[in-house]
Length: 163
Image (cartoon, rainbow, N blue to C red; front, side):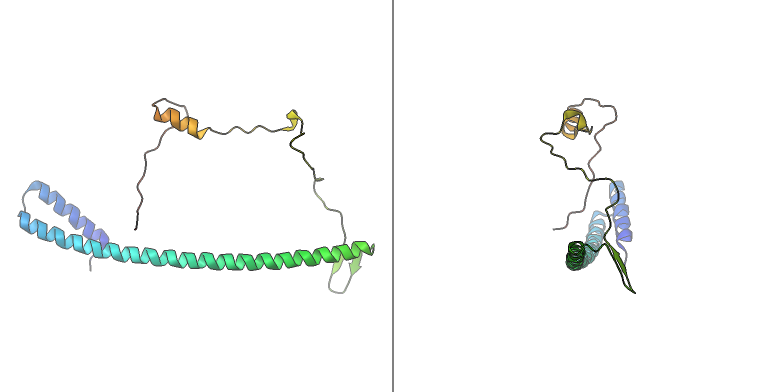
């Protein structure tokens, strides 16, 4: 059975022969109908494979979600147990426990000291200004035919739509 590549090549060749007018129109039409039928069969096969891949990917997504949720539950339990251990040791004023398997220490957090920010009362010179392109303004100006250095409208592409 010919490939989709072969079929589309044959169809393009027939179209160029049709433009020349060197082939009998009835023979040309019969051959074109035959090729179009094979292209439809190939297209249906491609779409079936695409749909199966999409179904497999959805199944993987569901499994990822299930495992992610399970991981989150494990980590939540771990955090709860660690917090209980820490609170118990701090309540007993114990900062270090050494066992044959583990050493547990209550230690100060490292890194930079945390900051609490009340944005409503924060003074003006403590804010950072971030410049970013105004996409709607740029689009509006480009569509109106104005030139903007560093910006241009790109041509729209095509995509495959399967219904």
